[in-house]
Each structure stands twice: as C-alpha cells, then as structure tokens.
Image 1 (cartoon, helix red, strand yellow):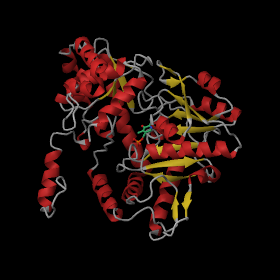
Image 2: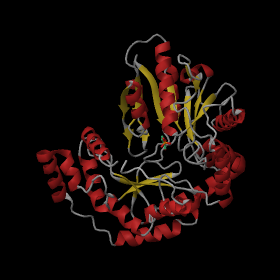
Image 3: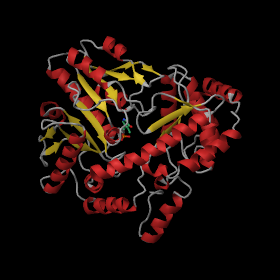
Image 4: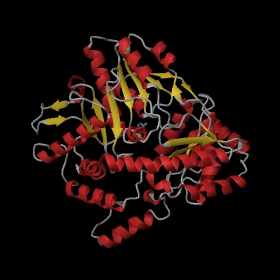
Length: 472
Ligand SMILES: *Cc1c(COP(=O)(O)O)cnc(C)c1O
C-alpha cells in the first residue's frame, strides 16, 4: 500500500497540488494551441458548459429509465446533428464518448451487415491512407481486414479510381473523410458514393472534425464538396461534438441512414441475475454530463452562433494561408476546411515546433514517412479564438524561421539504431530519454520523429508500443 494515499487531505491543498502539477502546460483556452483545442473565446459558453455538466455529472447514461431526461437529451442532440448532415426522418444514431467510439460502432455495423447478407469471408474495410487511425484500430479490434488506398498529395484526397479497383466480394465498408485530419482536405465523397451504390457496399463519412464546421463554411460562401446524407451512397457519418461543436471532451454522435443499420449496435445482455443491460454504444456507465453540455452548446450557439464562429475561423485561416505563402512555406493538400498543414525547404518541423513552443505556440508535428511517401509537416487546427491571435503568431513564426537551422541528427540516429540492434528497444528508449519517471524532452522528440519518418511503419508501431508500455 506504499503508493496508496492515507486520505483526509484538505480539499484546498488537493486542488493546489493539481494546479501545481499542470503549471507550465499549454492552456487550451489561451488561443495559442493549434491541435486538440477548439476554443471560441466565449466566456458565457464556457460557464454554461461547466454548469450543464455539473447538473448531470453524477447521472449515468446507463440508466435512461431512471433518468428519462437523458433519453430526451440524446434524442434532441442526435436529431440536431442528423439535420446538420441533411438526414431525413429515417436517419438515426447515438451519442458516444468520442470519434473513436463513433467510428468503432460504424465499423461494427458494417461487419454485422456483411454477415447478415450471408457472406462468410473476412470482411474488408477500404481506408484512404489519410483516414484516422481509429479505423485501423476498429478493424484490428473487430477482425476486419484493412485495405489501404493511395492519396494524391497535391489535393490531399483519396484516389477514387484506386478505391474502385480495391472493391471486391469481401468489401464491407468504404471510408472517406470530410475532411481528413492530416491535411484538412475533403475526399471526393460523391465519387465514393457512386462506387458504394454500384457495388452495394456501405460508405462511412468521417466528419468527426468537419461535421460542425464544413456546413457553416459552405453557408459563408466557401466551396465545400458534398459529403452528407444528401449523397445516396452515404450510409453512416461520425460527427464529434467535442471538436467544432465546442462542447466538452467526451462527446460525439454516430449517425446511420436507417434503423436497420443502427440496430447492429444495440447490445442486450440479460443472461445474468443482475439488471437487464441495454447499450447503444460501447461504453455503459458514463456521466451524462458531456451529453448535457453538448445539448447546452447546440442550444446556446445555434445556427447563428456556429455560423459566426465559422466566420472567425475563416478569417484566421485566410490570414494564415497568406502568411505561410509569404514566408515561402508550402501548404500540403487542399485546405478546404479549418486545418492547414505546411512544410518548407530546409525546415526541420520538430525543431520549428520546439522553437515556437518556447514562444508559447503549440503546433503539431506530423513526422511523415519515407516508406509511405508522406512529407514531414506541421499541422494547425484553427479555432475561432485564433482570429485575434493570428497576426502575432505569424510575426513569431517569421522571426523563428529567420534563426532556423535544421540540426544534423544522422550521427545520433545511427547511435540509437545501433543500440536497438545490440541491446534491444529498452536500452534504445533509455538513450532517447524515455524512462518510467521522465518527461520526454524536445531534444528526444527530434530523434523520435526522425525515426518515425525513416523506419517502416510496422517497426515504428512496435517501438512506440514498447515506449508507452514503460511510461505508466
Ligand atoms: C478527432 C478525429 C477522430 C477521432 O476522434 P477522437 O474523438 O479523438 O476519438 C477521427 N477522425 C477525425 C477526422 C478526427 O479529426
């Protein structure tokens, strides 16, 4: 029991300690983060989310008989998102705790539909290389075979002809993204929809990040390709509320074209002496707080609020794109949404991100892959709050680039690889500064990202699993 606290500590002290632990970490609401943060800058919304969460935080979504209002909130949130995705009466779905859970359910429905149609082979899911790894995870968990489809790096979109060639008797599901996370490009969902209809397979549109921003960008006059249920072949869509829905983390919706398809995800277990277990999602007991906060966000912002926020995102993005081009940086893919990825000649993206972090800006490194032919890029997800911070960001970027000198990492890399060969991953991770009790430094990240870029993906995946296995 050496690590188990005795208890009875003063609540104030406990809170002070928590604040102390996180001191110096980036503040998601601060307007200086460009990944995993979706910030409106609206203090009224922030308070509303907290209070809505608090009202429902100790009620469980497991028991919607005891708490009928939970069912009502879920129904209203699902209907609102379905209508945003141009779904008619027949479109339905469920609230989940995140994009990964929504995607897992869509993949599971496709597997059950495949089996229900009498097919007995190993079901396949066709994935653009830009699809979120949650699909690969779902395929691995659920026993589907992933079939990867190439992506055009100029447009950032999946090669539709290649997808067509990969469709066969065992195809259960085709995946398209609106937009994809790495480049912010929207796949040709119309093209994929035609293929899905012709070959009678299901098509999932991953609008996890785009669902709450693309429709509004389109209404502001941006050219956004069709991606919703308006396209006949689209059979399911995932939309995260904890991204551009501006709700709290732990909130997403998965939609299905019909109840017949959704039914594959309802799990009922009554062969035990306990309560009848009835689930529409993967998780069972979970706080209804994030559902209530999602409902609150949708009702507070509404169409007008989301449109206004999209306008801020658009202004920030226009400034950013112009600024990056001015600095001679290259935008990768077609940034049709609220994500911009860039690279540059003689730019080491990890070092640039470290130097920008010193100035308080957080950009996300996408290390790229020599094997898969993806360039290293920096990813920026734009939030409404960036409208007011973009000028300052570009000024700091310009200054940082002026002093930028890509480091020579070859010798250090050779050293790490030789340790792997002689003494295995454990020692190599130590050499990279990864130990159970340590914080991973920027200098280690320079090497780690370079290894991710240079090594074959299966080795990278094994090495990163080894690394995380010793962290906790
Ligand atoms: C965020 C995201 C996901 C996964 O969602 P989580 O909420 O992190 O589980 C899937 N697809 C896309 C395009 C995303 O942006």
